[in-house]
Length: 278
Image 1 (spheres, rainbow, N blue to C red):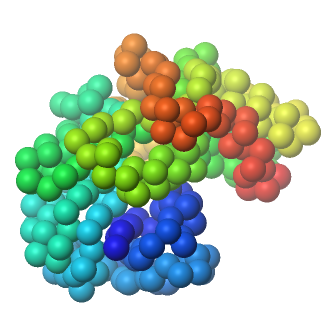
Image 2: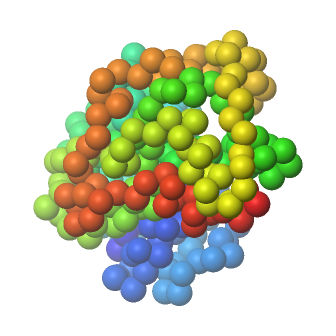
């Protein structure tokens, strides 16, 4: 049995669809039963922050897909793994972040790096997935595009290889089904560097209407982000967006190697989600 945590998120929903029909799969989230749960997938409510709630979920499980909210600093991962091991879990696939490797000392990503180490030292088989920035972060622009046909963002000319969450999910499905990936770490990116200005152009093309790009100053972006993110996370995020390292701009071959096709571009992602922006 494969247990999928974070089952209602951008990655989790697609992952469940990819795994449905391939064996016993249990979806886990803190909330209510997902309305779009694929046929044949079992659902149980549990909370990673309360590892004992996982005990009935992980009993009889062999593989755990671990997706943590935020950077996971609030979680006792050792206890989660103890509960999992007692239930029969032999392998953990962790959805981490590229920045856990590129910025392991940052406040916003150091906890994920520590979770990686904990899993690697647990004695369980493990695989780590490190995606770069999600294409779906563009949902933050949805309201301004719907109401004003405008994207407001900083660092308009700085490119990053944003990755489609569906590609992450499909990679996770491949890895979860094959023990040959144990002991490996995969970096997941899109196929090209894409700037906020270019993503605005892609969005306009998908809409069939002009969309204006307004470049924020870093100070303006910081003030806006502080309304819903802690200051250390804001500063770490702005650093990646404005001054990415060479590693953060590198195009990884791993999605193509694992899926046998080129990763989807931002333009392809937004074409399939255009109703959110219309």
